[in-house]
Each structure stands twice: as structure tokens, then as C-alpha cells.
Image (cartoon, rainbow, N blue to C red; front, side):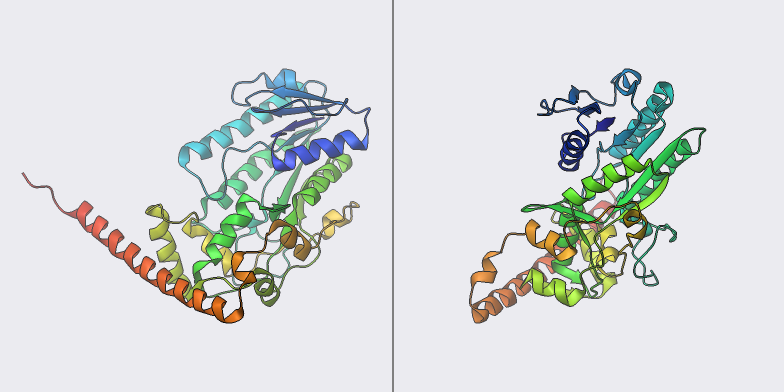
Length: 349
């Protein structure tokens, strides 16, 4: 058994579960920055997938869990996209050379896209149509296709996991943080149901798919979802200016290009339309989420300072914050227009 990206939040949990499940099964934990794991059955290898001898690292393995990634939902550029695809190509070539029969690869429920006509929930048989201006979801879909092409070979199987937004104790995952930021401040006028998946439950899903040698796609999310009104109660008072979706996308693009916001504009539809997923196929393999959506949200959030203030004071602060948001958005738009005009102005001799 081999795990790449073993030092990450999910990777550490997967390694621990594999080691605790059967101490007689050898696990090779690979990461660029990895300290020795405290399990007798685990061998840690500090290696970069870009230049490591993957044939040797994968030799004798009956499954590889590929969790290493070079990109996140909030930061993506062409060089990173090509590097991540190149790393997966190297992993696939290494699997073939070493004769490894099974691969587990991480995707995202975002590949279904956020669309008004999405079913609630979406099953694994649903149409995959990531929103065309959200590069991260497009990249997940691209990597899925590469992995499944390899899995179509003789004596090969591949599990593609499509998790909801992942969280852990006192910490939002990068995707969950991006979504939350997109719902704050100047936000689109829409409130879809949401799902939050605890990292422990995602690690359990990885181990379940390894044990089953599952060949196909598995959605990963707790049962059900959090309705908009329940999420509003959980999040408590927050400064938010509601605007039409087209204006939210425009302002998000201006703030993103100006470096004033951490959320790419392509994520806005995911805060407007539903993209929650069904977990029946994974449950049929014996997996159960230990945390509900609400529990996962609660353990990943610390109470904000506003929640301890009297209601009247909260309202005053929220109104003031909304005014600042309006002023900031207008200023951003003005600066962006000036910069655009300056770029279009012909140079003087």
C-alpha cells in the first residue's frame, strides 16, 4: 500500500487508519516533507513525485492512494495546472511499470457544477459539467479523465472520490474557506443547501474504497445537507451586501484581479445554485460518516467576536461594515476602470 501526499491533513489520517486496520500490511507514506510515522508497519519516504523513482516506490504495492496535489481552489495558474497533470501522468506510468492494479484519486463534488436545474442530491450517475469559468473544478475533471483512462486498461481499477467541502477541528479546508469567503462581504443573492465533510470521514472513505478495490466514482458526503436557514443560524451575524449574481461575479472578478479578495470569480455560482451529492453508493460499501454536516461545521469553526456582543451592538457594527463594503466595492471598480483605460491609452512619442 502506497499513499502520496501522506503528510497532508487527509493523508495523515489515511495512513493512521491503514496502519491501525491491519498492522501486518506494509504502508509506504510518500511526501516532499514528511517525518517518520509512529507506526511499525509504515515506512516514510521523503520524495518529490516530479523526479522520484516511482517504479521503485510503487514496487510490490497492491494499491496506490494518490493525494498529492500542487493546486488549491483559491490559487491556480497555468504552470501549476500543467505540473499537477504531469505528476499524475508520472504516477500512472509508475503504476503501470510496477504492476499496481488499483488507484485511488481525489476529485471533488464540484465537478458536477453548480446549476439551477441540478437534482438535489446529485448521484454518481449525474452529468459532470463543471462551471466553465472555475478553473479548479475543470482541473479536477481533467485529472479524473486521465485516471479513468488508465483504469480502463487490463487488470486495472480506479476509484475516483468526489468529496464535499472538507473541514477539520478548528479549521476550514481550503475549498470550504474559499466558499465561505465568497458568501461574505458582497455576496450573490442566492442560498443553496450546503454540505461539510469532516477530514476523518474522508479518510475513512479512502480506506473503504481501498478495501473494496472499488472501480468507479464515489461521492463522499454525510447524509443530507444543511438548509440555507440552518446555515444562517450556524454562521451567526456577518457583514454581507446582497447583490444580483451578475454584479457579484463582476465585483468578484475585479477584486480577484486587484488582489483584494481570495476568491476567484468562478466560485460564485457554487454559492447560488445547489450541488449537494448523494452518498448511497459509498454507504453500500459499509462506510458511515461519523459527523453530520452540522457537526462538521461546528467543530471547524470558533465563535466569532460578534457572537458575544449584544444584538443592538451587532446590528450597528453590521450596518457599518456593509457601508464599508459598498464603499470598497465602488473604489475597486473605479480603480479597475482607470487601470483599464490607462492600458488602452496609446503611448506618446
